[in-house]
Image (cartoon, one colour):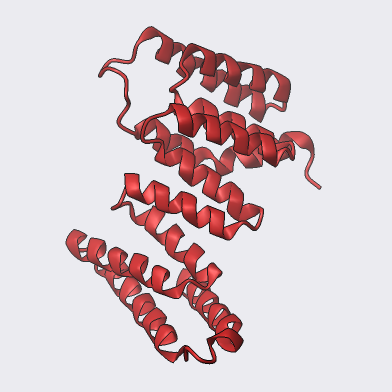
Length: 223
């Protein structure tokens, strides 16, 4: 098992993308961040530094101070939740995400981070719900759509996976990204074929095989 400071670092690294997304989101603040937001950003930076050095207590204190300064500062919630997950307290991590989702406007990064936590704990249906909520806020994010598609494949929800894959096709075509377009088309055709092969009468017995084949398709695509 990894030592505590390594678990903290790993969890924070897993939240790094979400933190970056949150920082880049259109803020509910004025164009120039106010004093309280600037304080929250500085405290969050300090918290991450403490966490990476292994001082979990100081990190938690700084994250909480950041939230007190600006309850709408998304990265502080993401960091604090990652810290709780690193210590093994998944319940508290989810509580922090929920608090952030209630306070931060259009917090797609919060939904994305909670979805990843739920996937890591095997709650794929809940993860899909969070990813759909994030998609509603960022409908044309290719990375998000790719993650949603993969989650639906793991769930065996192949029509929903196909919908996400076809949207990825459209986005790739609009961008002129021939590589991504080819990749999406191959995946979409494979998903469509799997759906067509599913006999409504016998689907119950075949479902596991279909899911495994879809997951294998995803694995081949990622190589």
